[in-house]
Length: 59
Image 1 (tube, rainbow, N blue to C red):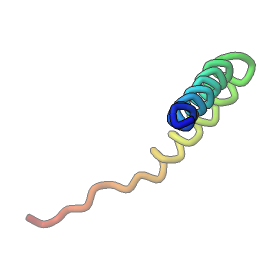
Image 2 (cartoon, rainbow, N blue to C red):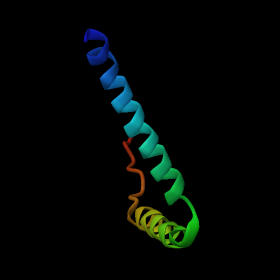
Image 3 (tube, rainbow, N blue to C red):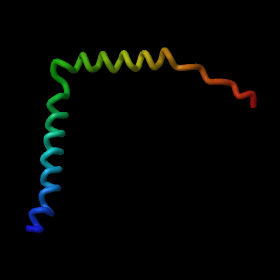
Image 4 (cartoon, rainbow, N blue to C red):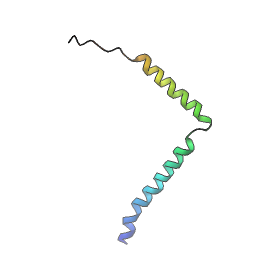
């Protein structure tokens, strides 16, 4: 029975990893792509707007 307890964790991790990859691939593109792109563009625009100019160190 030691071989069963040795194989269970890698098998469980492989199943969850496969599910994660499938979920990521399915969520790419589609109807939500433009909405997700708009959110990213808004965050980048806000970051550019709030960026402070570099300070002079006087050296």
